[in-house]
Amino acid sequence: ESIELDSVTIAPGERYEYIVDFSQFAPGTEFLVLNDARSPYPDGDPVDPNTTGQIMKVRVVADADHHGRTDKRIPDVLNDNIPELGEATKTRTLVFVEEEGPGGPLAMFLDGKRWGAPISELPELGSTEIWEVVNMTVDTHPFHMHLVQFQAMNRQAFDAAAYEAAYFANNPVIPANVTVNPDIDDYLVGPAIAPDPTEMGWKDTFRMNPGEVSRVKVRFQPIDSPAGVFEDYSFDVTEGPGYVWHCHILEHEDNEMMRPYKVVRPDDKRGFSGGATDAEMTCELGQNYPNPFNPTTEIRFRIANNEIVKIRVFNTLGQVVRTLVDSPFEKGVYSVNWDGRNTAGMRVPSGTYFYQINAGDFRQIKRMILMK
Image (cartoon, rainbow, N blue to C red; front, top):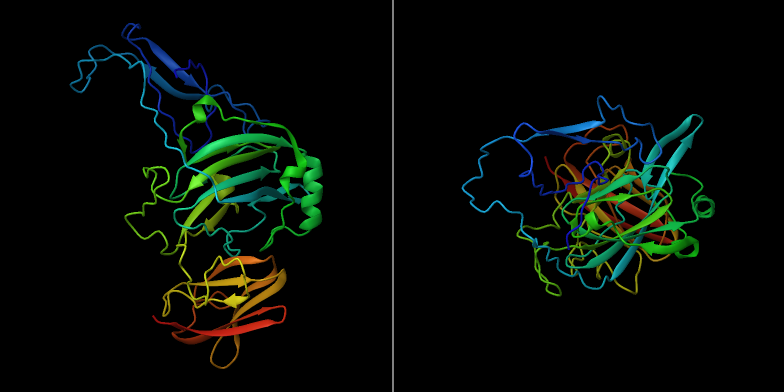
């Protein structure tokens, strides 16, 4: 279906392709593509019409090179065949949140976590998930995912003041390694609104507005796979170091609005005695991978109940080399990396090391080897 536009809202990192018919304009005619979006969007400062208010100049020229094409008409119908992604098997609720200081925001976080917090997003290869993001900040953030493209579902308003009160009651200290997000369904206001006509189709960046829940549907396999058919990537997506999701505003992604995620295979036990997504979950410390390693290794762990979890690395003398985790966790599967450095940030020598988990009454120790 064709639509006529005289403006479109584009966030940093978003890409659009437009077909424009200049055939009715004489050579030498000039057009300016202008920007009138406030920054930060939507309630920030107005743009300077002499600088950031000007994006691009287009000049119509005669005898343009049409690269051998003789039919210069714009087609009446464009190929917009977009495959269906099927039913989602998991919904993740994530929260954009600010850390306030005496003079205003100090930092903004994805799901209340810093970059280095244990990885909590471990989607299975071939699975389809809904990622719904609750934006508690006052800015619009362009949500971007690496590896995959997704389809925008909708946006929906929520009671921001009530949700924020409940959120900070659950999470009095932000950032944290683990956050407990209130059920957003209890705070929704009005109906879900479909994406703009320009936002239909495949996306890898989606504007997530303040005071709204934004939902996208993601399938973790090649974009051109037929609906209902599993196709693997041509490379091993489960190999480290993994991929990232982040805000595409440079100042934000460099100030903690970036988080890693890792794709796992459904049968990938990665050091566990049972599957990493067992319904009957038990506490367990996975064998680090790779092992031996250099310079970084991944340690997965799973928690059967809400517990305070501590994971430490020891040398063969029993001395603590590094504390990797020391905070409360909810039941679930997590991943943390060790980069072969001690508490002072110095690289440790090659050799055998031990890592130990304590979670409530549960305690387990495993051995790993660092080789340089």
